[in-house]
Image (tube, rainbow, N blue to C red):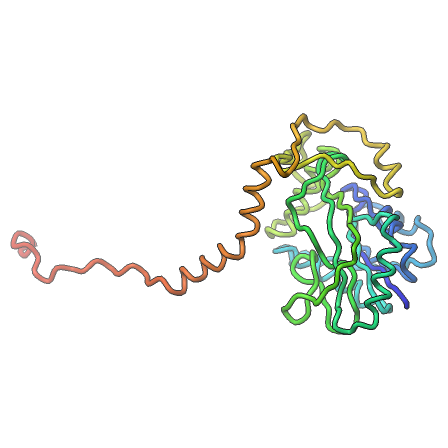
Length: 305
């Protein structure tokens, strides 16, 4: 079994992405690691090269600035990296995602056991989403995503590169039994504000370049649905966690089971498809309002007008 890893990255230093930790966390599992390094304003390419692993193969790319709508440029870049992979399985890791060393054997076993099951096109992972601090977990965002895919069956990164599909449908995926540790919202407030302004511009079409972000000294992390995380972090994150030098905003964290904000958010999230369907149905099947009927015999007083 030959396994390829693949990732995309751009401006990792400026926006404080733990991409080195991300790549190192899956290196023990992969036979090659394809990293698509986009044109950056910092030394991101040198940072990736500094990992100094013979498994790493850097491909230099240029991001299409015209595709700043809906995050489509992220999927495009991901597909460029995927196309360079040679493995029987391809392990995708985003620049703010890390795999725990305790899960490596489980992931390898899942890849081996599903290799001959041609109906299985990907392996899914559960998620720990962290916000503001390494001890704060948000259980509300997406619970599961495919991160290992079978190549050469038509798999493509879709949307904003959060998931994968084949010709407009979801993959037939098996569960890997492992977790992804997502650190995209754990940064100093100023870095977080700059990163989010730039990142949001990849969705709303604004032309925000590095150095032009709306930078603020504070950031609203919105921790109302969060809870304490009491587990262990991947060992590759130890140095980064120890170097944390900002204070988390004061917040009262409660278990999701007694947190009304979590439950209202979960209901809203899980009824999103129904609300979209209802909106489409309303526009398709509800007749538009008829224009007011004009009186063919206006009052006598108007006839001389």
